[in-house]
Length: 323
Image 1: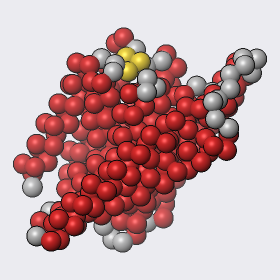
Image 2: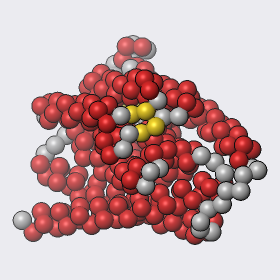
Image 3: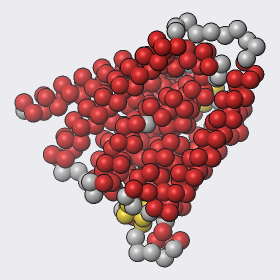
Image 4: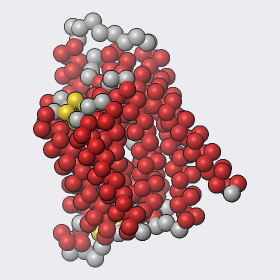
């Protein structure tokens, strides 16, 4: 009983760190976008996305090295599904999300391609007639190569924004160093909170005797996605939907192309069949559903957000049934 109370206290404390960290991060990111003369969505796709994805990087890499490939791979699949279905869904329910033409034309297709890549590269069982689903070093190199292409696109977009806004007298409210302190402090709160939350949640799940795959797809995924969740909700409440959308798209792309790429390169993964055949395809379905909604009217309405959220609840019910 005392141990249970201690775990609950850790979860509450972690949530406080995450919420305050997100508040600092969004304020610093918005003001930094003004200083750099780039759009908020570019800041969301880069600084915010990479920072909020650090928990996924740490957990997936160390889980793979520690001999828990299902936890490593399941964390990325589960986190990306949660990001698109739950975080975008909740954000859209609070305030409909605008999807710019540039985002729809370039960034969203990259998101879908990255989701497809994770299924294709993991399907060695059928494609290369191997005896297991694996993500090896060659697969890791392919993912990292795709990440390099995406990074180059972001660089070109940022340079274009800077040139277009060079003549405009746009300045942030805070000094550059104050914004940097906000961003670093925000990241620290997010990462510390996510780490404590995940530790407490996984401890409970382990005591309950749950599988590595289930922990990765649900508890670890939700824990490592807390930074994205709170950052996106705070951004939407501050009328900064560009940061919210950019954070989720950028985080999902970073999780697959960089986190899984570097993990596969350092420590090849042998993955449970269901993680590719079922959970991987669920991620592809949610990605295509997001693309469809975004392409219809260049926004995610409240009812579309509700559909995304409902799709995850159905998937979660299936995961519980599969236990």
